[in-house]
Amino acid sequence: MTPLAPPRIPFLAAAFDHRFARRLPGESGPPRQPRQVYGACWSDVPPTPVAEPRLLAWSDDLAATLGLAPPDEAPDIAEVLAGNRLLPGMRPIAACYGGHQFGQWAGQLGDGRAIVLGDLAAPDGARWELQLKGAGLTPYSRRADGRAVLRSSLREFVCSEAMHHLGVPTTRALALVATGEPVVRDMFYDGRPEREPGAVVTRVAPSFVRFGNFEIFAARGDHERLRLLADYVIEQHFPEIDAADPARYAAWFAEVARRTAALMAHWLRVGFVHGVMNTDNLSILGQTIDYGPFGWLDVFDPDFTPNTTDRGGRYAYAQQPGVALWNLQRLAEALAPLLDRPAATAVAGALDGFAGVFAAEWKRQALAKIGLIAADDGEDELTARLLGILTLTEVDTTRFFRALMAVDPAHLPAAGLPAPLLAACYAPDALPAAFVFRLRDWLAAYAARINADGVSDAERRARMATANPRIIPRNYLLQLAIDAAAEGDVAPLSRLLDAIRDPYGDGPDDDPMTALRPEWARHAPGCSALSCSS
Ligand code: AMP
Ligand code: MG
Image 1 (cartoon, rainbow, N blue to C red):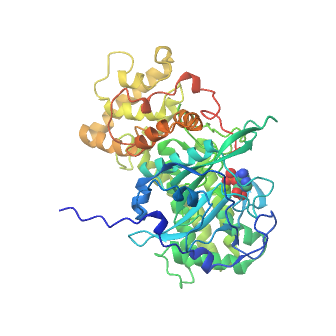
Image 2: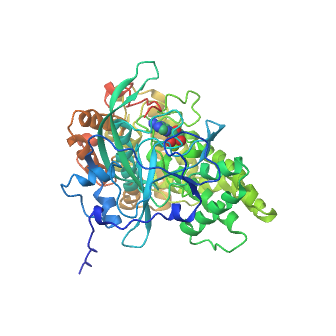
Image 3: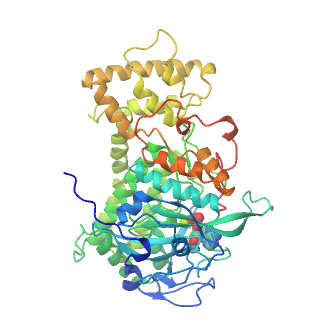
């Protein structure tokens, strides 16, 4: 007998609290006046109402986790999710944080357009914060407008939900609301600003605290707030750590480093490039946070970054684990005032150990991509060699690994490559000889390895099916959904949302969600290159 699902309550009747605001020091200065905020983890700021809120998308998967009923037709829900109306218990605030951007200390940043409304308890007791991104000016808006455009909001909504279904730690998204108000953006930074439709995303996470929330207090010498915030985060979000243990900060840092290393391995596995890995965009919970000029690998290219602002490729695909370590070093510096000598030694040890932790996690995930398990017997060489071969021509990363599942490497054609692998190449009729030769050679070594390990084909395929998504929200698919939504047609968005819910399942070969990136999308804005303008 299946147990009865607990009853779900309507969003408008949910019980809200705001622990972060209740437990940590904040301030109530002029809410919409950009300024430096001292001695506070947050500032009171009501959302700025919008003209005509309209619900465009809703994540029923997340709603079920939160114990919330599907939205009814009442327009009130859009009013709340756009920030026009607050529910009892909500207390809107913007958090104060700083950060290192592209390697430089940038001072105070903070929630310039995100407003946390409060938290609510899911049926399992876990507490989740709700945040509106694009809800108007805050003390941290600097010279910007506090708003977000539909294109970037839709991308964040779809991709945070996709990441969740891909099994990658991430903040979630409950709703996407059109504001009915234009937002002016110079998308290409070429002096030609345009009016674009505005939107608000309801982001949901246990916490939105970033490395930068600690850095700002350390930079200002405010060790009292630094300690309060660290103790709060440990107590609320790392219950496995004894909050009274003098060694708690070191244990906590080691756990943050471990989660961050695991996250990097996940990103590499699914072909995700965050695009702006500044320290203000790294979650203290080890989740993917702040979806901006991110992208997915179509062609396998370690140097790929979708972010046109990142000309040096600092945040390119293969750089991400190294950048994560750099960011953890900045976090360790920020926490230094809290550490006694043994704790400082332990934190230094965690930093030294990062490369090893990442390598072990990546090895596990990379081997799963080819259906093997770690035996400490040269398997790493097999995966590293394969990735090197994939750079020799334009191979579609996602399609390639699914195609490899379907291939029997012990029975290759007399010449050339098996048909499924050819179908993962962008120019199958013009493959470089070295690519074909080396891939055949690799397939033979792979077959020998499978044979030596005694891995059955069923086992191999089952393992590969858990590590290699068939469906990712490719950049061009997102762009098609954005173009349609801007014209009032949300059908492509709904189809994409349906597809990303089952990224590893089987499906028809001609599924448009799994097609190679079309040629028109190779250089199209939004598809291969994105600016930070959002
Ligand atoms: P990002 O790197 O995009 O996560 O943002 C860096 C900083 O800029 C954060 O403090 C954001 O809150 C702020 N920011 C970005 N866009 C806006 C905007 N339109 N209005 C106000 N602040 C913004
Ligand atoms: Mg950010």
